[in-house]
Length: 163
Image (cartoon, rainbow, N blue to C red; front, side, top):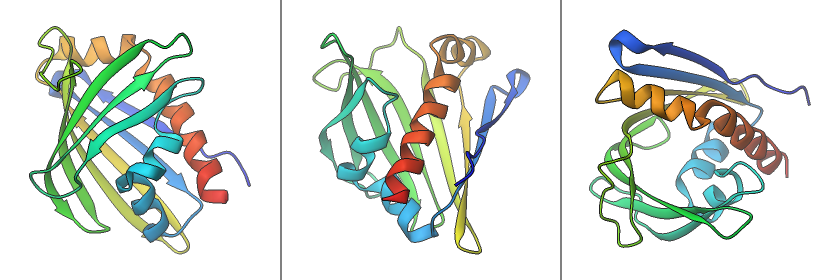
């Protein structure tokens, strides 16, 4: 299996980033890996970090509340509010950093995600459009290592899909 490339296209003026990645797995399997908390936990965090689900209700109006736990036990809480879901086609969500009770952290960037899933023969292409309230928030996410971390997570997903 050849290593797939995660492609990033940043448009600071539009306050948007587009991430494109192909996975060697059928659409149904890739969709499930993005929407089932037991599977999400296995790939979402770049190692040695872990994603731990507190609760998840994957439906319009539902949310995923989780934290990323680092190797020293440190935790960063996040909440993903699901806005629109078109099964095995796309979903959109508002993603934000929060405290352990789910209260938004206004000091940290927030993002709007639109994830599209496109079947390509037996493979699946995922296109993620991430919009930010400001160019500064987009730059802050990039400086936090978003690109490197998401690429590592995609490698984790490749491994999960191959099993």
